[in-house]
Each structure stands twice: as C-alpha cells, then as structure tokens.
Length: 640
Image (cartoon, rainbow, N blue to C red):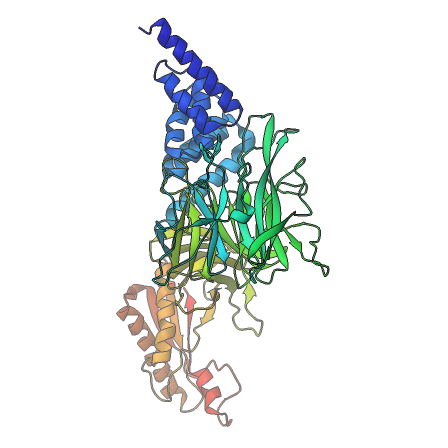
C-alpha cells in the first residue's frame, strides 16, 4: 500500500510533468512521468500523454509500448490506432502495423482511403527490403553519441551539417525542452589527408544560442550561405511547434517555433550581413530547409504557406536579374502530397531529392528523387532500401551524383536522435517502359495499343510479384533497377496470354523499353511466326528460326490449354508435289523442335501447304529477288 508521502510525491511529479508537456517540453516531461509512474499506476490521461511524448520525441520503441496500452483504454481516441500503427511500422513490424491501420479505418471511416494506402505501403516496403540497392555506413567520426546530427551539404572542402551536441562556452548551455538537448547549431567538418573526417567545428559566425540554426545550403562559389532559424511567436492557430520539422500535433500551445530562412555573406573570410529571406512570415507560416540549385539561380525550400497541398510542401523561388528572389511557387502535385514534404536537395546534375511521408515509403520520412525542372517534375521515385529504412530518413547529399554521398537517419537510435551515414549505390534505378499491343495479322495496319492488360511483374532477384494494368495507351512505367531481370506475364480476356523477360543490364540507359504483342484467341485464325524461314530446298531449323520458335514455346507454356496447327509454306519454284512434301517436312521439323523443348506432342499438328498460299506475286515464271522468295518460305500457326 502506498504511503501518503509517496502519493504526494507522485502527484507533484505528475503536476510538473503535465506542465512541461503543455509547454512542449516533452523530453523533460518524460523524466517526471517516469518518476510519477514509478510510485503510482498511470491513469488514462497520463498513459495517453506518455505515449504522445514518446512519439513526439521519436522514441518509437517506447511509443509502441505505450500506444499498445492507450488503444485499450475505454473511450480511447481512435487516432491512437494510427499512431500505434506508425510506431509499429517504424519498428519494422509491418503486419502488426497493417492490423492497426485497419482498426483506424474501422473507427474513422473518413480515413479509410488513407489507411488502405498505408497498408499497401507496408507491403511494398517489405518487397523493397528484400533487394538492397546500396551500402550504408554510419559516420562515427562526425556523429556525437547521444545527440542529433543531420542534413549534411557540401561546404568548401567538406560539409556543413546540423547538430544539437552543444557549443562549448563559459556559460551553461541552454536545453531545448522538446528534446532535452541543446539547441541546434551549424557545424562544419573537413576530411583529412587519409580520407577520414576531422573534428566538427561550430560555425561561430551565425551562432545564436537562443535560436535553432539548422539545415543550411551554400552557393557553389562558397560566398553565400542560406540556413534555417527558428522564431518564437504567440500562437494564433492550431499549428505544430516543432522547430525543425512539422509533425501532426493535437495540442495548442501558447507559443510556437516558426521557421525562417536567413542568408549570410562571406566577407574577408568571415560570415556576416545576415539577412532574412524576403518571404519569411513568422506570424502566419514557416519557411525552412533551403536548398540552392548548383547554379545558384533556384532556391528550393519547405513551407506550410498558403497554397500548400498538405502539411508542408516543397516550394521554389527564381533569382531575379537584380539578385532578389521571385515569388515562391509550389513545386506541384507530382512532388507534394497531403502529407509532409521537406528537406529538399538538388545535386550537381539538377536532380531534385526530398523527404516525404506522403508518398509510399518504408516508414516515417523516406527520401525520394524526381526528374525535371522547377515546377515541372516527373518520375518521383523512392530510393529504396537501405537508403530508406522503417524510420526517418532525410537530408541527403551526393558527393558523386547518383553514386555516393551522405544521408540523415534515426534508424539506429533508441532515444530519437539522428545520425549521418555514408552510402554507396550498388543497384541504380531505371524505368521499364512496358507497351502492350494487339498484333495485326494479314493486314498492313500497324500493331495497335491494347489497354487494360493485366501484367504480373516478377522481380527475379527476390521473386516478388506485383500486378498492374496497362493504361488506355497500352503503357505502364515500372520503377526498376539496372542489373535485375523482370518476368512479365500479361493476360486479357479474348487474347492469348503472353510472357516476356526484361533483362536490364547494369549499363542500360535510364529508360528501357519492352513491347508485349498479344494475339486474339480465335479458332482457325492464322498467326504468322516472324522470321520462321528456311533455306532453299531445306527443312532444317535455322538459328534465327529457333529463336522465334522459342517464343512459341513460351506462348504454349503460358496457355497450357492451347492446341495449334503448324502450317509450313514454300516458294513457287519446283513442282507442286515437290513443294508439298517439302512444306510438310518443314512443318514437322517445327513440331519436332517444339516437342524437344518440352511441349506435349498431342497439342501440335503439322500441315504443309506447298506453294498454294503465296504472300506476294512471286508465282511460277515470275522473276523475284531471293528476299521475296524467302517471304513465302514461312511457318504459321492457327488455334484449333
């Protein structure tokens, strides 16, 4: 039985914890909640707040444990299923996460569509994790144990990055209550002659201990720096107070941190002339995470300003002839979603990278790439595993475009801190452009697009299969990997099933095209086998003919109930009887070849037509070049 003094101490800790929680000092609040529940069993409100505090400090293992309790509480907020699912997903427990997303959809039907997308994303994540595309390694010489280090970008001979490790000074370092660690500041690091990183140094010129200073981007000439700084303002509307990101937060604090962009100019070796970005507006919204294009003419950033499509979007501004920045423009719906898009980066080749939890990912924030310019983007691609992980991954940079670089992640953290990792790409992305066509027979018409073909795409490297449909133009674009083979099985009612193998070499271009030709499944309809030709007076199968007959083997394997008649034809030279015997031998040779490849003989019939069905005017007595005579020496098949 608890003593009066123990209960009083528990209530005191709980009162202090609740006060800190309401002030968004979640890490500090957790210390008091732990003390309180050590003396007294937590009630429903305390359980909820502990779960929320662990979520907001990104301690996903603890968040999972406490949301498991919260969802069991009488009258539990249905959003707890969503937060529980997110924690499970961040911890790599995808099946359990799917179950909670389903319960969230049942409790809040208005979110059913979003829940379905999240469940589909968990399935996709497990497929991605079966085929690693890169090698990733933590940079221990840069990271400070127990603190957050993130968002490296090129800076002079090294990098500039963000850290809350604290800056040594004579006075006691201020602690930011949300994280329980010092305020974020900018640090630089340079490699030594042996390829190792030297000790990070605080960028004293822009140091402001009462603010967060973070997520910087430097001009290529090294003379201008853009960075994020927070500003405390009185709350006007229900927005999130997180100073470095935007997280859905139900509380409405009295004050919030809003992000602003500032620039600094290098003069005589020091950074000075710190100026605010023209479109900062701390009373209404945040702008942050600046990223300069390689030529310095475009500034990308994240914001929740009016015109945003979701929680936060990627915007850009174009440098004007007088050096000022033009009006911000939303990067568009290809990039931005109803979720969070942030931490943009543009590599030396002009490719845009950004973090998002709105596009399908492995969990938390994932890193994506996009091709295009300014607001005209296409081909948004998840960079896959292990560049992305079930936890938060963001703040990427490349030391060599498309090959190697650094990224930020909290994948190995128990206390929610971030670290900087190096990566080396081992499997590069490609787009597999699939076209489904109806093959036209006995007509000069070109093959026509065949829409709504179901294509089962199997990635041979890990045997995962994805079912998709070609669009109205008979097209489907698959995010693929170079050096990986893909097997395509196409089906559509009224047509013969088709199979194709797309072997994408490591040296392939960024887009690889493959066409799938579909024949109608009609009895007695003649289907010409391309390039099944024979030498004059011979019936043996030439190598080029064997290649085409192999395709017929695949067709018969894809349509196991199919029975066909193989028809062989000759040119007009020689007598009718001679050509009839020759054509029959040619048809039988084709049948024998198919049988040798494992096709059941009972499914095949051979028939020769001699010179009775010529495809051109090369009849008896007509002089024709050998190429035209060869067109008549052909093999066809028809369904019987």
